Image (cartoon, rainbow, N blue to C red; front, side, top):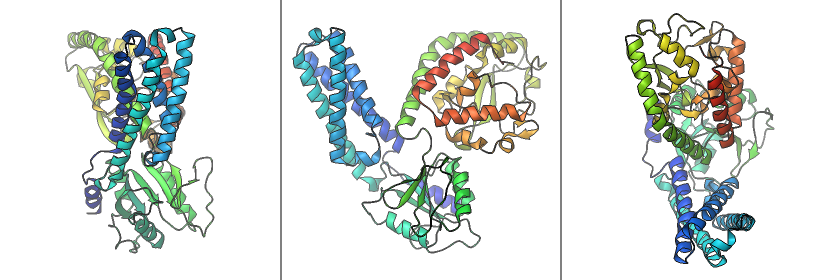
Length: 479
């Protein structure tokens, strides 16, 4: 009943979600930043072939600077003066850099000063107009625009006071969609029941997070009991949610400074951690996945057709093999590969990992595994949103290392699922692929996966892709 109530509250209609809002704003900025100056340049007689690369460079620099300095963060989008300063500074810096590049490559004469000044002014006005529109949309937060779906842990006096403040419209608090509170005690505190719905215990909260119904969790427990608070943080750190602590000024809180960033936020909340690849990085990452998958699809189609024919001629059975894998937010999905084993010997539950010279593998399958071409159908998993091009490789539920299931071997194993799994990953280009006969092999693989999650960047993805191409040519550790 409690889980159903939480899902129902989380499912209240919203005009636009946070990621979609950021994607739309980025697209609007790109259109205004490039389109308006380009039309003005053409109107003023500048040659299109000269104007296009110059304006593309200026637009890319402007949007990069805006994103770098937090121009897509909801709090800054609500600040009129902050937005004006940021957009103006970004346009000036981008224009100056572009002018220097144009002068260096002798493009200034072809472009002309008149339209360059007009293009800068129009870009500044266009981006400023987009910011005004975004600010007005965010102001309509009662409709659910960009408001994080929030659950409070603790229904005692601290939790009740926090929930009352969240619902009071206090300007020091970021607006949220408060779903209710959970309480893990045998006898839940009822102080908050008159303020927000009681949603059950920690198990119900974790289940709802796995369903994608919760964006933020605020722990509102007395800091005098520090061990339970740290245990909660440790469990929630494996989930793709934002974690905050309701500040208790009467108790000094001692936490592991190496793991938790305890920056004091407005409204008496301590920021513990954000989910990786949230906000603008999630938009960039998804755009990267779709762009690369689209580029790969056309040349891959004839190759996949030839592979399909070879599989059918080599052994009876279906061309494709699907297996249940654990993906983002601990949700299972069907991952597709070309079938490389004899159909009657296939192991969809991954009870026995494939070994070198495995007799279950067909002749064509052995070649596909050596070249990694059996992974090509995962391009469609990327389009479906189940996977990314680069990320931690997904494992089948119940897969073992040294006789034990993976999450028993590595305590932080589930933290890999805070991002979408990948067709390739940092562990794979380091040679950490193939069967995990020992626990040490799994530990090294998970360490690389967590390193990738913590240090993600577009350049890291491009480097992994380049190293993947090299590793495929070497056919190392494939079996």
